[in-house]
Length: 360
Image (tube, rainbow, N blue to C red; front, side, top):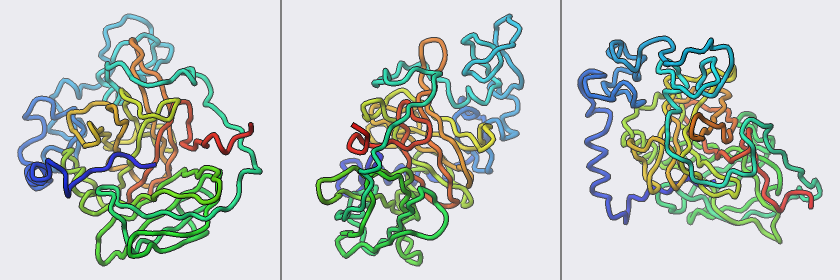
């Protein structure tokens, strides 16, 4: 899984990009939250006091932060719908946490006929005979520049969990090359890290990785993320990431595995409550854009300030009158790390097997 690559070297707008970092970095944020229209609903800490939007007392007088259900319907509110109040109509509750995150009216673009909204998640029948070890011959590549990353320790966890000891490990060579044995058709998590003293990359975890059944050798590249990108992207989005929190990066995909445009993300804790002050952000043309309110044609998204522990990240799309739950991924977040996971239409855990692994 590789979300969009953010080019710096050789990128035509590199000078502009760096100037934006200076202008939009955390140290450039001044003033009081809510003094500029829209600041109380932009999922950003505009005055850098550690409080976001309606959680900041400076926004207490903003209409968007008024408490209670302010919808204009007249029903008895005794049933349920996706706007998280208790009625089945399609109004919007301005006091609902749900609608702070899911509020787009943009029509989605993507193939989603494989799953009926509201029905059970799709299941797959894996052919156990296709689970086998194969040599992996590829590289560890920087997420930003796609340059090879040397000296990266890659640890495989075959139980698809972030904790515990590594089942297998290897270190990338001077050109980023990596060789080790990996299983086909088995969900796993891999951790990538370089020398912490040099601070060149962030510790990253790619979860729910499933390698296809190869003819002989499995190739490709494994994710790493430079410290520069880790600091740059949140700054461009107007977000400050707490040291005890994490960022989760991914792509929303349709039934055909292609990027899905028009989706918005919601992050829930283990008890099902929407987590705050987690902020969700989106990309445009594979570039982070604070004005992009839902996934664009590249399908990329970022959730910032996600607390450690198990979370479920859900993708919703507008159906013309309300919102449909498209898919979800379950991630056990590690503090001060970068997590990678995709969301695929019709699947609720984030684990999706390639066709070569399925019973035929």
